[in-house]
Image 1 (cartoon, rainbow, N blue to C red):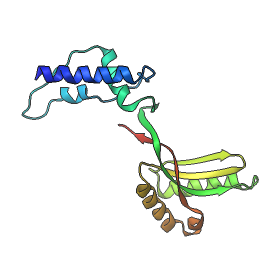
Image 2: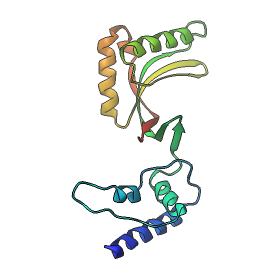
Image 3: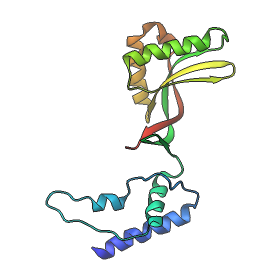
Image 4: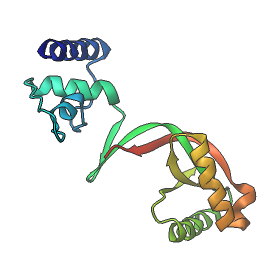
Length: 166
Protein backbone atom coordinates (compact mmCIF):
# COMPACT_ATOMS: atom_id res chain seq x y z
CA UNK A 1 0.00 0.00 0.00
CA UNK A 2 2.79 2.40 0.91
CA UNK A 3 4.61 1.66 -2.34
CA UNK A 4 1.48 2.49 -4.39
CA UNK A 5 1.05 5.72 -2.46
CA UNK A 6 4.68 6.66 -3.11
CA UNK A 7 4.22 5.95 -6.83
CA UNK A 8 1.10 8.14 -6.95
CA UNK A 9 2.94 10.99 -5.21
CA UNK A 10 5.96 10.61 -7.48
CA UNK A 11 3.81 10.57 -10.63
CA UNK A 12 1.89 13.66 -9.51
CA UNK A 13 5.10 15.51 -8.70
CA UNK A 14 6.76 14.49 -11.96
CA UNK A 15 3.81 15.41 -14.18
CA UNK A 16 3.24 18.73 -12.41
CA UNK A 17 6.86 19.86 -12.52
CA UNK A 18 7.08 19.08 -16.24
CA UNK A 19 3.74 20.83 -16.84
CA UNK A 20 4.69 24.29 -15.61
CA UNK A 21 5.57 26.52 -12.74
CA UNK A 22 2.99 29.32 -13.21
CA UNK A 23 0.15 27.81 -11.19
CA UNK A 24 -1.95 29.79 -8.75
CA UNK A 25 -1.33 28.27 -5.31
CA UNK A 26 -3.41 30.70 -3.25
CA UNK A 27 -6.65 28.70 -3.59
CA UNK A 28 -6.95 25.38 -1.75
CA UNK A 29 -8.38 22.77 -4.10
CA UNK A 30 -9.48 19.35 -2.84
CA UNK A 31 -6.80 16.92 -3.99
CA UNK A 32 -6.27 13.17 -3.93
CA UNK A 33 -4.47 13.60 -0.59
CA UNK A 34 -7.58 15.13 0.99
CA UNK A 35 -9.79 12.36 -0.39
CA UNK A 36 -7.48 9.60 0.87
CA UNK A 37 -7.31 11.14 4.37
CA UNK A 38 -11.12 11.25 4.68
CA UNK A 39 -12.37 8.49 6.93
CA UNK A 40 -15.27 6.45 5.64
CA UNK A 41 -17.44 4.14 7.75
CA UNK A 42 -15.75 0.79 8.33
CA UNK A 43 -12.56 1.71 6.47
CA UNK A 44 -9.14 2.76 7.63
CA UNK A 45 -7.49 6.16 7.51
CA UNK A 46 -4.60 6.98 5.19
CA UNK A 47 -2.10 9.53 6.46
CA UNK A 48 0.04 11.21 3.83
CA UNK A 49 3.11 13.20 4.86
CA UNK A 50 4.30 15.66 2.24
CA UNK A 51 5.26 19.30 2.03
CA UNK A 52 2.75 22.04 1.25
CA UNK A 53 4.60 22.63 -2.02
CA UNK A 54 3.67 19.16 -3.28
CA UNK A 55 0.06 19.61 -2.19
CA UNK A 56 -0.11 22.93 -4.06
CA UNK A 57 1.39 21.43 -7.21
CA UNK A 58 -1.09 18.59 -7.37
CA UNK A 59 -4.08 20.93 -7.20
CA UNK A 60 -2.45 23.30 -9.66
CA UNK A 61 -1.95 20.54 -12.22
CA UNK A 62 -5.62 19.65 -12.18
CA UNK A 63 -7.03 23.17 -12.39
CA UNK A 64 -4.17 25.28 -13.71
CA UNK A 65 -4.48 29.03 -13.41
CA UNK A 66 -8.20 29.03 -14.24
CA UNK A 67 -9.25 28.97 -10.58
CA UNK A 68 -10.79 32.20 -9.29
CA UNK A 69 -11.96 33.12 -5.81
CA UNK A 70 -14.89 35.48 -5.13
CA UNK A 71 -15.58 35.88 -1.43
CA UNK A 72 -16.12 32.39 -0.01
CA UNK A 73 -16.82 30.77 -3.40
CA UNK A 74 -14.19 29.21 -5.68
CA UNK A 75 -14.80 28.99 -9.41
CA UNK A 76 -13.20 27.20 -12.32
CA UNK A 77 -13.17 29.30 -15.48
CA UNK A 78 -13.70 27.18 -18.61
CA UNK A 79 -15.15 27.46 -22.11
CA UNK A 80 -18.88 26.90 -21.75
CA UNK A 81 -22.23 28.27 -22.83
CA UNK A 82 -24.72 30.99 -21.94
CA UNK A 83 -28.14 31.96 -23.24
CA UNK A 84 -28.09 35.42 -24.80
CA UNK A 85 -31.40 37.12 -24.06
CA UNK A 86 -30.79 40.63 -25.35
CA UNK A 87 -28.44 42.58 -27.59
CA UNK A 88 -29.00 46.19 -28.61
CA UNK A 89 -27.01 49.08 -29.98
CA UNK A 90 -29.38 52.00 -29.35
CA UNK A 91 -27.27 54.11 -26.99
CA UNK A 92 -30.29 55.75 -25.38
CA UNK A 93 -32.40 52.65 -24.73
CA UNK A 94 -30.28 49.50 -24.83
CA UNK A 95 -28.56 49.89 -21.45
CA UNK A 96 -31.85 50.46 -19.62
CA UNK A 97 -33.53 47.64 -21.50
CA UNK A 98 -30.72 45.18 -20.68
CA UNK A 99 -30.90 45.99 -16.95
CA UNK A 100 -34.72 45.91 -16.98
CA UNK A 101 -34.74 42.44 -18.55
CA UNK A 102 -32.04 41.29 -16.13
CA UNK A 103 -34.21 42.38 -13.20
CA UNK A 104 -37.25 40.53 -14.60
CA UNK A 105 -35.23 37.35 -15.10
CA UNK A 106 -33.71 37.59 -11.61
CA UNK A 107 -37.21 37.79 -10.11
CA UNK A 108 -38.21 34.44 -11.67
CA UNK A 109 -34.79 32.73 -11.59
CA UNK A 110 -32.87 34.19 -8.61
CA UNK A 111 -30.22 31.43 -8.54
CA UNK A 112 -29.21 31.76 -12.20
CA UNK A 113 -26.35 34.21 -12.80
CA UNK A 114 -26.93 37.04 -15.26
CA UNK A 115 -24.36 39.19 -17.04
CA UNK A 116 -24.95 42.60 -18.59
CA UNK A 117 -21.97 43.67 -20.70
CA UNK A 118 -21.10 46.55 -22.98
CA UNK A 119 -18.88 45.91 -25.97
CA UNK A 120 -19.16 49.01 -28.17
CA UNK A 121 -21.67 49.59 -29.59
CA UNK A 122 -23.69 46.68 -28.12
CA UNK A 123 -25.30 46.13 -24.71
CA UNK A 124 -25.83 42.41 -24.09
CA UNK A 125 -27.64 40.34 -21.47
CA UNK A 126 -26.47 36.76 -21.08
CA UNK A 127 -27.78 34.19 -18.61
CA UNK A 128 -26.19 31.20 -16.91
CA UNK A 129 -22.87 29.38 -16.62
CA UNK A 130 -23.25 26.02 -18.37
CA UNK A 131 -20.73 23.35 -19.28
CA UNK A 132 -22.71 22.00 -22.21
CA UNK A 133 -24.81 23.40 -25.04
CA UNK A 134 -27.71 21.18 -23.91
CA UNK A 135 -27.81 22.73 -20.41
CA UNK A 136 -27.80 26.23 -21.89
CA UNK A 137 -30.51 25.24 -24.37
CA UNK A 138 -32.70 23.87 -21.57
CA UNK A 139 -32.37 27.19 -19.70
CA UNK A 140 -33.13 29.13 -22.87
CA UNK A 141 -36.33 27.10 -23.36
CA UNK A 142 -37.41 27.92 -19.78
CA UNK A 143 -36.71 31.61 -20.44
CA UNK A 144 -38.70 31.47 -23.69
CA UNK A 145 -41.64 29.96 -21.84
CA UNK A 146 -41.44 32.55 -19.05
CA UNK A 147 -40.80 35.51 -21.38
CA UNK A 148 -42.34 34.81 -24.81
CA UNK A 149 -41.78 38.42 -25.92
CA UNK A 150 -37.98 37.91 -25.67
CA UNK A 151 -37.97 34.53 -27.44
CA UNK A 152 -37.20 35.66 -30.98
CA UNK A 153 -33.87 37.25 -30.02
CA UNK A 154 -32.60 34.46 -27.74
CA UNK A 155 -29.80 32.11 -28.75
CA UNK A 156 -26.88 30.16 -27.24
CA UNK A 157 -23.36 31.64 -27.18
CA UNK A 158 -20.03 30.02 -26.42
CA UNK A 159 -18.12 31.97 -23.77
CA UNK A 160 -15.82 31.62 -20.77
CA UNK A 161 -18.02 30.64 -17.80
CA UNK A 162 -17.51 30.20 -14.06
CA UNK A 163 -18.27 26.73 -12.65
CA UNK A 164 -18.43 26.52 -8.81
CA UNK A 165 -15.91 24.11 -7.26
CA UNK A 166 -17.37 23.94 -3.75
